[in-house]
Length: 463
Ligand SMILES: [Zn+2]
Image 1 (cartoon, protein in one colour):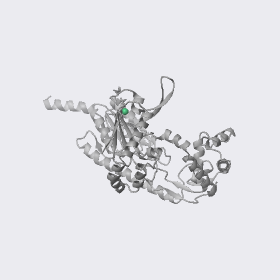
Image 2: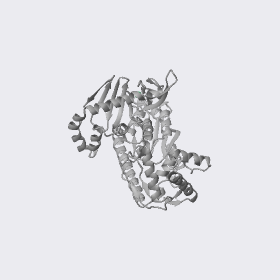
Image 3: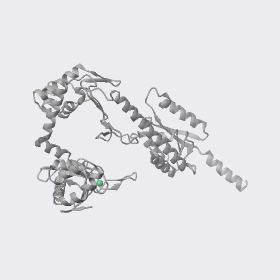
Image 4: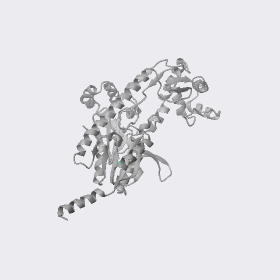
């Protein structure tokens, strides 16, 4: 045998090696979508793999959901990556890039990671094998196109949904007093009775939400299917729900990011779809408006105000200066048994001190706990500092700010002239507190282009 023949022989050996193949697909649970059902995809991959000499099917990994972008729960995908890491797979086949990863970056990240492990990914419809030399460029191009495609689809869906909302189609589910079928609301007589009872207790009998909830519980009145139990917040939401006086407001939540599909409360980012007198009311507009005016005046009472600020003042606004995580509140006990509220980095809370877990991930954080009273102290200090620097702030910043964000000038005026109460100030102006340690806290405000740095008792504005 010549040297060349031996080389051929060696090559053939490599080729004859059995390849362990995994298949990845996204399956549709929609009965009308048989083409993407698990059975049909399974058949497809089995047949495909059988046709290839030396391929052995190890497993078909299937996640639910058709669209490649809604991939929060990619359990099977993660299993597959694990299997590859454990050396169980040599090759992964999948139909399309759009079904494989959430976006361009994701597909590059995972195919690189797999390539490093010696595992190739073949995208059958796109004709890409990631072990080919030019694969990454083609993958980038193809997955950018796929990403753009799914953005367009998301836009189209949004647009269609909006048109349908404007035509009065209801997106939502049954609620107390109304049944919703195929986008049409019909009055539910039994539920409507309870709604009227609640408004009667609130407006005529002048009972509070807590009392009403208790009375309904005690009377053994059933809640509608989606509520667990009568509580003051349930009652509050009922009184605030404009559907009961016949109006329909939709688009209360929206999806800012078509990749994550996460829902957010619409605070004016997108236009609401409002239709007056859309359906049969349960409560007259007069009673509804009266009830809501009563709620507004109660919300303004000093007693309620402190309740609100204590509960929500720093929620989501304290960030870890070390790892960037959000601080979460918890109650701690002093040596004398009394309880106080303190904030701690979520990362540190969950995983403790920084370390590397068996899978090689950096977890944990050294971010220190921070008592709520200290946070309050710092913010109050900043308030004082703002008042002292009133003139300077007015001169230097309101002009530039109001040109950026029209309408904020009057708010800033109220703030620096002391017309704004502490609570309003905290809620409106405090963007976040970044805690690096007990002695180093940065305060960032929403409207003023300053970052206050608090260093063990001394606070000074930085530009
Ligand atoms: Zn942290």
